[in-house]
Image 1 (cartoon, rainbow, N blue to C red):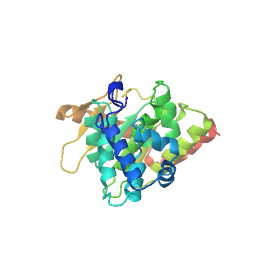
Image 2 (image 1 turned 90 degrees about the vertical axis):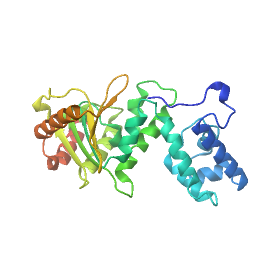
Image 3 (image 1 turned 180 degrees about the vertical axis):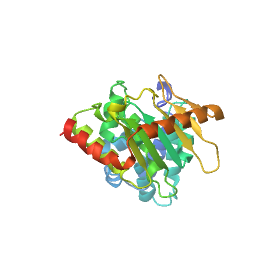
Image 4 (image 1 turned 60 degrees about the vertical axis):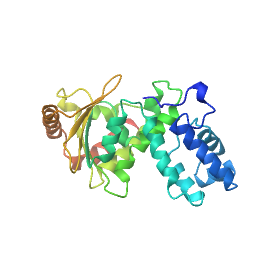
Length: 277
């Protein structure tokens, strides 16, 4: 996944991209209200360097930065959060934007992952380790937009429910060092113990050959389910009723194959102790 930025010829044009426009608006407001970059960084819980890079359109701002701008600059009335929504939309590659837009509207997200934990439950360190393997030049931007997708699970209004099924291999597949994996699996255990979510593990002894690639389904209050199939070099969305029915049947079989949700926390604790202590 790559983050779209302006071309080199447009580096000085504040309207060359949503990212450049956001940065210019931050700079104008900061200077208008007599704030230094260091002062804004303190308000946004970040450093001078990140503020400078956001203002020049070199870094994608996290949601918390836009919220801090609206708190800091008088009469903003949510303007920076509205601008940020456009920035984050265009931070995804064109082929992924339709899925993200659907994911943000979903009230239930069901996912199956055979070898890695999905982005919706990744910690920052785990996401960095996964994304670093592709040797991107914009690693921190990729991490920022990936972690922002998790907002659907914690938003105040109608947070989405998550039902996650994974092969046990995904928990034993070491990403980063032992500390990264401990923190990641502890985070996964917390999600598994959150009442509205479900996390199930297919034990290694079951030899899951039913599905070998990651996929997921999105459900909505007033619309039909859709399926997202992850793949290389890009994923795709399926809305045909026959495809959705086939995916739903496969997911039902996976949940039947997996250990019950109330055994997940104990299994995670056992893997942490065996592999990452």
